[in-house]
Length: 529
Image (cartoon, rainbow, N blue to C red):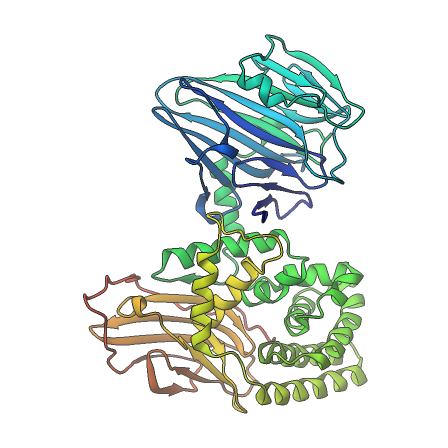
């Protein structure tokens, strides 16, 4: 069966955890998982077996909320990663009682299934703390009401669900075959919230009382990602998918699949960080060397620290070579822009020969891009629709699927794309979904091969008004803007402006107005890449 788990973590710490569709938590590298069960007034509810389980991300951030329907309301679990005041990382698991009566909450530490998982040799419960192999893996803040342990000859779930957990706060079990398990059971009053902390990595010391709460974590994620590209579209599904996908990929920014989408959505600095600090990362970026080169050049321009100055030239040279094997027009265009920017940086660093080679490569890449045909724009909308339909509610896909990266690349192409041909052309709204017609949308600071793009669409009856702002180096050739999905007759080479386009046949009945607030397309500092 395909695995669809949601990654939680923190941008300022390396450790990650995963939450499956039932709310079971697994820390990366751990041989055990943490499950939760609810003892309601009718029976025990095991989320993995319930059909009433619903799951979502809070605020489109890596905060996973899992709801289970029980009599008179929901049992609600929330899982997120946080850092305490000393920089120690932890996963926080909280359970809230949204019913009219008390219920019991069981938290079970059990070995991961399957060969190669490693197993759990011993588990101990010592008051509020659970230890695996002598290392603290869970701190509940208070002692449980009941405890159950078993050595693998049975499943601890059998004990808990039969109501046979012991009235104790101390227990220990050992299993040479790696089957040791333990469950701790707490009463939870109506409207109450309980919270447990899982140190990352296991065994660490975390100041639980100084960890941020769930609202602070959601707000923090939204603030951290506000520096990148932003879209506002009249499609809630796409809006949530894009916001969630950006944040998911930031947690795995060193993975190959994240390079191109994060670069396009304004997080090239995070991409370059991995490329410059991991010698193998640049080699692994071979599938998208144009985006990688674009990101490294931008980081080199913005940061003049010794490490970047020392490593960037070699990484740039490697990526330019890798671009010789690339055929995708988008990667060739990004590679050309990155090589041109790198040439200026190499010249400033006194590496004139390398700068000349980079500039020659930039011209060759631009010519090759003009010779390649990109994907049919109509296929973009179809692929994006199919991809969104295949996602889990937390915007995850089965292991091995392009997932979040594909969503961002397709969304970027739907909103704007560099067109084929010898001229530098940006197509704004190359294809417009029928349900968007008559509704407004905005794109802010999307990174293209020709500069940073912002634009907005507003409507005057059946006529779309287009506002745009393209931020590019002052010495760059002009970019011709088109809007084929709205008005095939319009074009402009102005870097900034507004235009009232030709009437468009609107669907019946008339759509809601979509985004209607005033829009400001302020420019950020020019990005020479």
